[in-house]
View 1 (cartoon, rainbow, N blue to C red):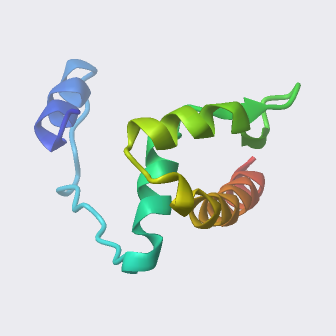
View 2: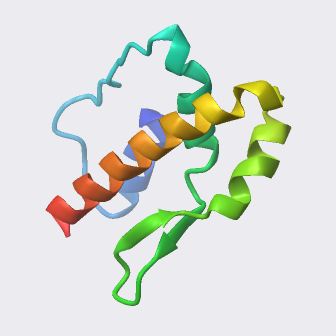
Length: 99
């Protein structure tokens, strides 16, 4: 993925420039939640949208193959799924605030 240099070049193509450098945010993740966070990131393009484009939820059909591809053991799936549901609900809540 492009970093700040690519962003800078893209902006310059439109005659724009960054006012200040972009600093990546750092977030700590508890080890117990790491697999759920990785899974949520891997599912980032697997959202169901309502008729007006609002987030409805993750495409649950995409979860099993994603967890398999990530090499997550099936015994861990229930905990990962619980974590996904928490993040899904919060993402829907945040999207609703902006939309």
